[in-house]
Length: 234
Image (cartoon, rainbow, N blue to C red):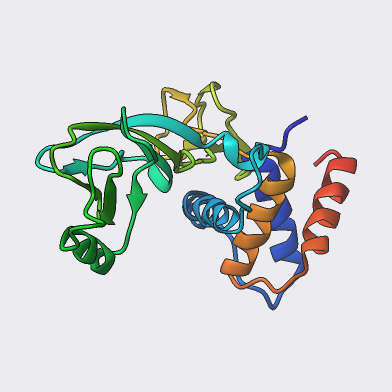
């Protein structure tokens, strides 16, 4: 059974309670970390991914094919863009070669190495990609997208316990209960979005969250705590 956001939260909560000298955890901090740490982890894995690795289940789920439409040589990158893989122009002999701005300037001013429609070049600047020659109007864009923003939704019951609300779930609040948005009546529809990673990387994200929030521990401590809680059915 795949680990849920709540499984990770319970593991972290257990460790923070155990380590009195560590930092502290609450749901708001946890949800903020669920948005930032997966991006950092994926970027790190992509930066360390060998060129010879053609199949990688950890990263290929984030690989995506789109297109870029250029106006005067400029195209806006997709909103979920994280890292470039390749850019291909129909009819070109090779993929577009991304260069640093200084290199682009040198190539544009070099009669022999100036870019052509058969051998285009480009550069990333901010949220845009610039292609040369500027007469090119479109290109296939293979890239890695950002992970979706994960969230753990919940409500507080009438004795003050935090109750996890799984993705797709609903809950009719009763007297004394408070929803995650402060609501005290009506039916909640869960806002939970689970992490898009396998269990090993979910545990790695938990470890990164713990370190980011000031908890000093080893990776083995995280796995041992998760295993203990699962065996105890907590």
